[in-house]
Length: 325
Image (tube, rainbow, N blue to C red; front, top):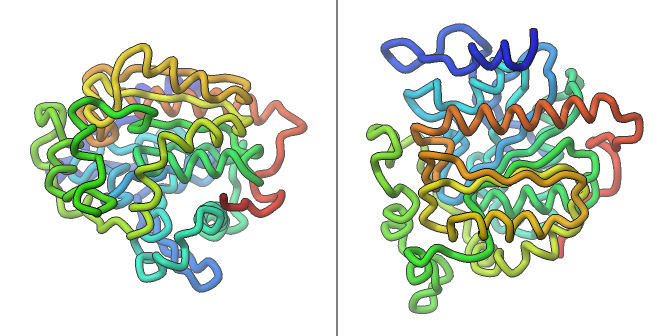
């Protein structure tokens, strides 16, 4: 069966309760990595085409990639239907690792934990062509670091969304440090990232399953990220795809913004950019999520095909441990 044939049946509508019929279940898992419990939502298939690692943004849980009550919008379920094992990892400092937030704050520690959590969650099972990473918003900081250092050359590819170099004019005042606080008030952020409201199912906005407390270290990560991105992006040696939502309210929209990001990945063999029609900042939770996920997974399929043909690609389980700054 071709990717196109699988894609026609990849986004399940679900039953009256919003549960997806058939297919592998989405399971909550916890893996121990040297005493740090790392939690995730996992949709596992017996013989995966590849492994897709999904990294959520700030103040949200891994359920970002499994839209509550809307299986058709779920990256986990769509990816599994297309033959990928998908792991939506609670980033270090979230989920089960929240009590260890101070310990995992260093960048190199977080990169190492992410890779080793994938290893622990998968065990000795098949991994197909390798590991592909998709990240959203603050999760892009971890994803780019994973690709830029150590084991990063062994990745199949990288998808980024909800990030950029210049803030949207609507966000500039909100995201600026206020009264000595490194992060703005939660209410102002919520109004910013969930607009315009008509782009999302009403019952998804503010859903309890999506809510999570941001670890304190993100106050040191978020403000300098636009300035740090160019140096890290230049180290990436794998294919990259960058998506900007049509109605993005955090980062500057438009063609110039797409070209600006593409120009940073000077070492990547292939860089694609796309504007997602009908999308808002939280791309994986909006009405456009199914379209977005199918395009991302098509890119992952291309990367997997290239990885399967390569005899020289580095195994993502080998190589030097990533380092921090």
